[in-house]
Image (cartoon, rainbow, N blue to C red; front, top):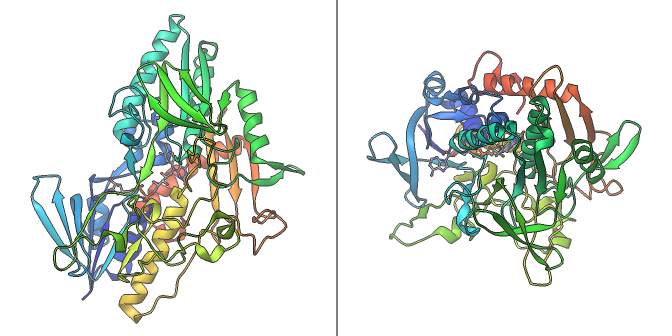
Length: 477
Ligand SMILES: Cc1cc2nc3c(=O)[nH]c(=O)nc-3n(C[C@H](O)[C@H](O)[C@H](O)COP(=O)(O)OP(=O)(O)OC[C@H]3O[C@@H](n4cnc5c(N)ncnc54)[C@H](O)[C@@H]3O)c2cc1C
């Protein structure tokens, strides 16, 4: 009997758990440990954050799903990994008791640590700016936003800044979606003229999104995502400041540094700034009690897998095979990492060091869709290893599709969405040398009501799939 432990039940870990539970749960021991006792459908938090979706519509309890799939569930936080002796130590959320989980295969899928400490004053932790990355944060920002709506109704003008809170932040897609949802909500409430909306980002260009932007078909033309997003912002009256690294935040101002090395300040009444993401901090303990973290994680805490690390950017962009294929640690072959937890080999966007030596570069996103696909690849390989002793699955981010649907409102009648489909996620210059690394036949950008329908549909079909309901395996990640 094999023992499989999965740390984290987000898009990557939960997807992996379902496939492994389905294939191995009856005859092997599969355990998932997760800090919350629920799965959180994070993409819909942009709707929670403006009060257009009830928080409970974005979650479901994990335990009943795992029972059905013959998976043991621990509601707790993993704290130590002992890779030589093959066990994980965790602390149960319910009674603070310690739990030891032995494994033959370990999957680390812990998503990001929201590193507010790297930007003084940032985030709910310090009480000035907000976040939309977790359920409690989304509820908190919704309450603040609705309080401001009441003030706007009385005639007050409010300045709202939405964007990134660190030179190396990612998740620009979510910030774009949140600001456009605020715009749409204020239009619906007849209050749009009471708010100044500013997009504030570390991206090199609008529409970069940490994936080097996209050039795609739009109707009968080819356009760049910079033009596309600029048109959306102009249409919505949203201002933008890009190429900016947030350095510090206080009660009234965001302090930043830009690509040219200038320092400046932006005043705000309300701000949502996404922090730097790092890996979750674990103790990695060797057989003699020594620290073996350097064999597993990079200095930022992301798990090193089968990527080629340390290449200069110019080399990396010409080497699709530098991106991991099976998400397996090199030293400990029975450890895998998926979703945001794995260490990418470098940025996808072109890095920028400004004259002050500050590196202002959007980090590579590992979106929900990408995380789910990686979770499936890892699961299939673990199933292979248990059944046949040999892995047969692989998928690099240079071979993966992604669809980003950024909604503007959740209405199926007058909602809208900016849809960007890209193949592959990481431009692959070898396969598509004359198309900036992406397949022009598949890559597209679209604006309209159809995207709003799609986004709503995806919310419900994904939650259906992730609850392992009828036909779940037929719904793609
Ligand atoms: C507002 C917002 C909107 C977004 N919209 C989209 C979208 O439209 N489409 C899209 O594809 N992506 C979207 N994303 C990105 C997407 O949500 C993430 O890429 C995705 O959640 C990453 O999945 P993951 O499994 O790596 O991590 P997560 O989903 O963060 O899951 C990690 C899990 O691990 C748990 N965990 C962490 N540490 C421990 C520990 N020590 N012990 C036990 N458990 C632990 C966490 O509690 C969590 O449950 C959005 C993100 C945000 C913030």
